Image 1 (cartoon, rainbow, N blue to C red):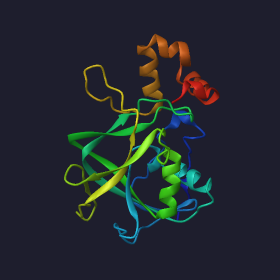
Image 2 (image 1 turned 60 degrees about the vertical axis):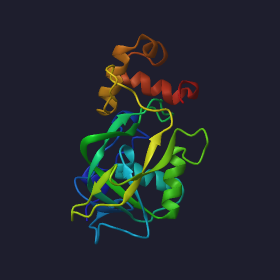
Image 3 (image 1 turned 90 degrees about the horizontal axis):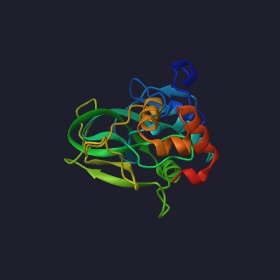
Image 4 (image 1 turned 30 degrees about the vertical axis):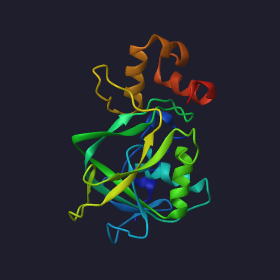
Length: 222
């Protein structure tokens, strides 16, 4: 099977912030080491379903997070049709140098997102990477039950719910009261810097400066 490098999925937004949220697979698969393998099933009852709305859907980023804790166990990644949820913009700057995505309740919206089926150790790793165990961490892991959020798999199975990492700081709005959609890192930072003199004062005038300053000064980040 093709490697992540051959598939264009090996990039790591933690190392290259302006690529956030990273490349997502075109289809479901089993992430195992540096390869994407075919899945034998879509539901794993012995694992926790976690919706990925940002870089957790990027195999390179997932592999990087797991490797940091010495894990290389397989991760099923299942492409799903999700209704009731949109991808918003977290109201904080990550120390990794990007502004991350966060789920937003949107009853009329349907998106193609990935469900990660994580075992206990894998779930602990992703929890830690999101700050979920910490009282002042940037994200908390929340259970999103059906029918509030409907997660439909390719075989028409509808899950009873799924976890998602919700930003504790909330999300940015677009100026009309509606949540701002995350368009990808470079266009997002370009828009934010153009609209805020205060942000330009703190982070510079370009996406490159923004990421460099955020990574270099933790005081600028939540």
